[in-house]
Image 1: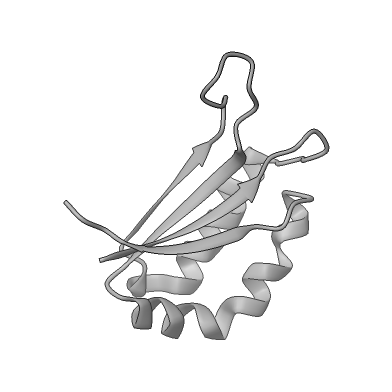
Image 2: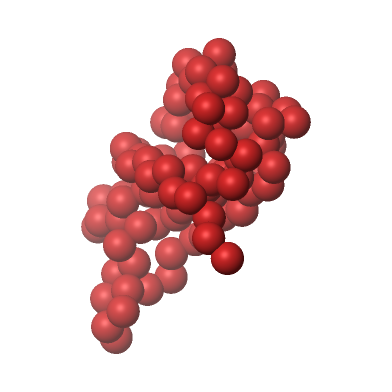
Length: 103
């Protein structure tokens, strides 16, 4: 299993509509990626490691797939629609990391 983490960097000017992201964007992603998507969740950053420190990422969306190939096959045909939705919930550009899930 692999996890695709879509990480939205935080800064003083960053905006992020978490309600839209969870209720509209992630719902759309789930519908488009259908059975290839094995699970998903969202982290919403509250703080950094030191007192008063800003969280390094305002939000992180996690998508679970069987393999990198299954992610690419599912995401590729819908990439344009998924990416076009980003301005509806944030003014930041996400960073993506694909990781292998270890128990």
